[in-house]
Image (cartoon, rainbow, N blue to C red; front, side):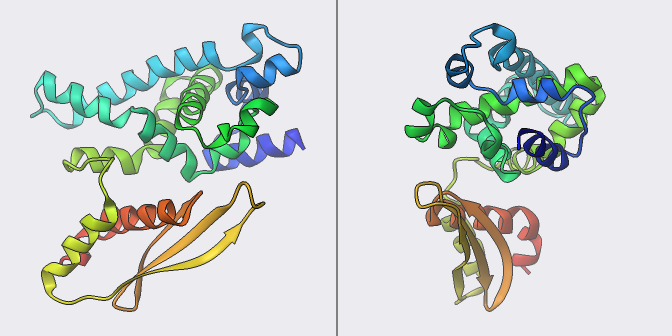
Length: 237
């Protein structure tokens, strides 16, 4: 089962590890390591997360410096902070269901640790650190930029990652008069204590977005966000 989990996440990351143990370590929370009587630093993800955090800052700094030359140092700092914040990393890792692969101890599981932004964001950074150690900087950079593509586009377009996307979308659509916006539950999966909802978003009968989340509200927000990012120009026609 453990090997299957690693293979599944590798497919979502679009990277096959030469040393899968690095990915296992990146996904291992301290609570799990201690329960397994393995409190050594190389058995859980805190040290490799430290490395991934530094690499992440370098990747985003390089992106902002090279691709947005009009930004002053202060603005670059603000945009980098918005892109690499806990909520942003957590959202990006959730999109590939990365949080489902984190190894947690029973105490963290029982306190919904798999839903905590801090734990998920740390796992994102640790995974990036593992990719860097296994495949080098360029591969780590390309995977990082793909995972954070939505967040990067949103921030560079002047958006706020903490925006109420449903309200923002409604404001955009209503510029053309009366519209019909519908959020429909497409599927609901997982055990009662750990549900995953998928919501389809329709604009005047046409599907324009889809979102997933641990609650229907979160899934609706993610569906509206997808519509704004991928169809903003179309929606305003």
